[in-house]
Image (tube, rainbow, N blue to C red; front, side):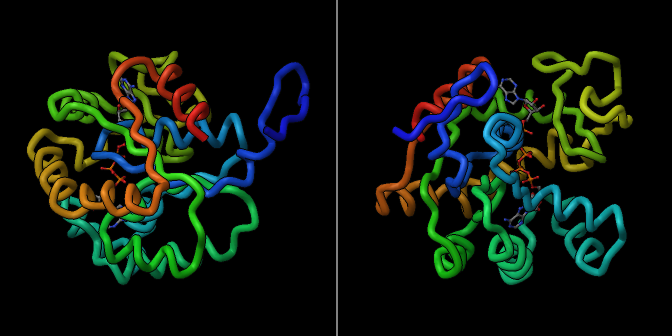
Length: 222
Ligand code: AP5
């Protein structure tokens, strides 16, 4: 294994160029773990959800169209998301972690045409735990870091630890919409577990329990 010393810690330099997909249902911790992979290893985090929410906030044509789907907990059409990600991914030279893409077999097939993926991490969490996590999540609109009122509270109530912006609750984090998102996940995204398993790229990680221990399990699997 290729290692080098950086400050007082040992970093695996082989991981830093990896192209990783984080799979898992809504609330399984994809964003939380992608943020840690970015902080620790410098992997660029590409979140389709964050990109679409930014477009909604900026009231772009993409945002106005995507909002209709996102508010209902439905998926934005494949061709739109594929176009967005193709442009982002093909312009990258560094390693990256995909959070929320691909989400359908059509998106996975398209992705395979423009990049080779090294690892696919599947985070597995029980449905009732997911509902509890999402309805108590608070998100930063500026740097996209996520908090949880019980499990990962911000140091100062309602304020992002990282950038100081006021936290908000996502409009799709109500119980009804979360349950719809879980249904959409089972129908459209769950088949990707078998899809990547057949390609020999899938690693299953238990996504319940301590955030840092889950991160360690992910890093050890790479
Ligand atoms: P997106 O933003 O991707 O939402 P999602 O997949 O539903 O995932 P979430 O962001 O809700 O959860 P997460 O797994 O990142 O969990 P997190 O780390 O935040 O997509 C939103 C919408 O955009 C979609 O519904 C769709 O409309 C559209 N869209 C996006 N991508 C698309 C695509 N490819 N194709 C088509 N449409 C697309 O954690 C959740 C909470 O739990 C947080 O509060 C966190 O602090 C807490 N937490 C995390 N880990 C733990 C732990 N181990 N223990 C306790 N709490 C924890």
